[in-house]
Length: 135
Image 1: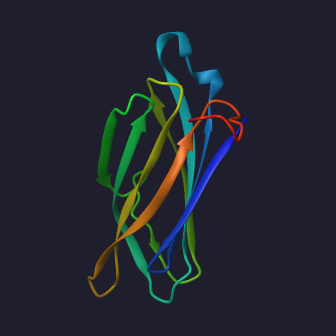
Image 2 (image 1 turned 135 degrees about the horizontal axis):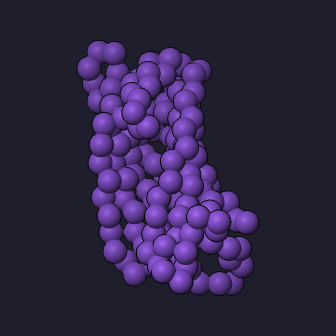
């Protein structure tokens, strides 16, 4: 099974995303495709930062966009000291066989400054896609 991955670093916060298809929990004949994704946040900078909120942009194969916003992630607002990391897993359903996800985490420094740590776009794919295949 193909695993899609992306990585972006913003102001010392590195966000790595990996996603894979959950065939056993999907029902393609009913237009239900479930994907699980794992996020790793690493503070590779020199200042602490706390994750305050999230904004996901989920786009399916028919260009339907869903914006998902909320406080923290999986009920937490982790604070990362330099060198620390935080990892969590979640899932997203689609009505089409493939799509994309991207977004940002709003981060706050100890002195109150805020910034958006980018989550680079990654693919949600149910199977291997060859280099010559259009997605």
